[in-house]
Amino acid sequence: MPRILGADVTDTVPGRPPTAADVALHAGVSKATATRALGDYGRISQKTKQRVLAAADELGYRPNAAAQTMNTGKSGSLGIVARGITNPVWSVAFQGIVDAARESGKTVLFAGSGFDVAEERSAIDLFLGKQVDGLIVSAADNQDARHLRRAREHGVPLVLWERRVPGLDAPVVEADMRSASAELARELLKRGHRRVAFVSTLAQPTTHYERNLALPASIISDKIEGLFDAFDEANVAAPVDLVRFPNRTSEHIAKAFAEVLDHTDPPTALVASDSQVAETMLEVVRERGLRVPGDVSLAMFDNLSWARFTVPPLTVVAQPDYDMGRRAAQLAMGQIAPTHHSSGSPPFEAKLILRASVGPAPRNI
Figure 1: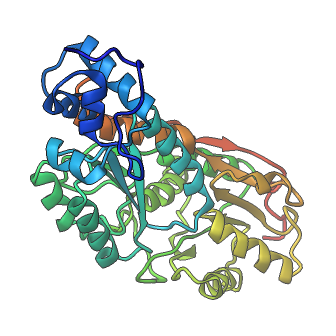
Figure 2: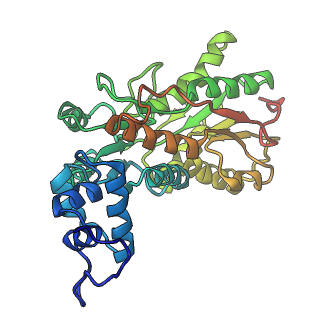
């Protein structure tokens, strides 16, 4: 005879947490039915499912994640692998991922690769071992992505963050950095700047850059080539000799800025590829006693709150990191559950925010 839900709550054994069998007994259904309702799989009427869930709530039942994964083949989680977890931009994007995942009842597992392909591979293997329902990966190197291709070939739902991987069939969440970068360069050219330095970082540093050089990060290529697109439009020689790729230590970034500032034909504007590079850029400019924008104009990609409070406020190229994070999670879940949209991801708009750090090029240059 079916139990009356809520008639009493004595179906559990004192001293241990309630089990699926306890929930089944309390809801008046078989253990198999309760398991399907709690795991959200198999055929079961909505009325019965609600009765089981209500019984679970009344008993304080919490599902066993390992057992649920074994029963359903799904862990209810997404795995996130970020190349640089110290970049504060990631915290904003990560919040968007977490919020979207939580709204769909999923948890998020997070790992950092430190821009190391081997670490990225290990993190992905770990997540696959935990049977995550999908992966969001900020690839350490888009030219060494065999592990990503293997994961995709095995049917693992995969979303790429900002970095496109040639030949990999996976949606990419990114902003249109090339267009925004070109807009920045047009504003610099309009103010008389012809010598514009660009500094980013790579795991394998180099002081040499050629137009359309294949880089391990498509987003960096977009930023550089966007700048140079505007130079091409204006029939002005692109300052490829002022591009630098140091490694990611502040010491080497500072050395790269020193090199371009000491050039025989020095820059009148400095552009930092991200906020961490920009911090060192500001330090070098201050140490040299350069006036901004009187001696040199400054700009960076990333729009962190502190950029508004530098003296003068710093010109930035901004992207909607939180919204991008939400879309990444939605795409990953869309590949898992047909009820979500996952047909693709057109680029988000990146916006140039002009501030007082950009001014006319010095007349004596």
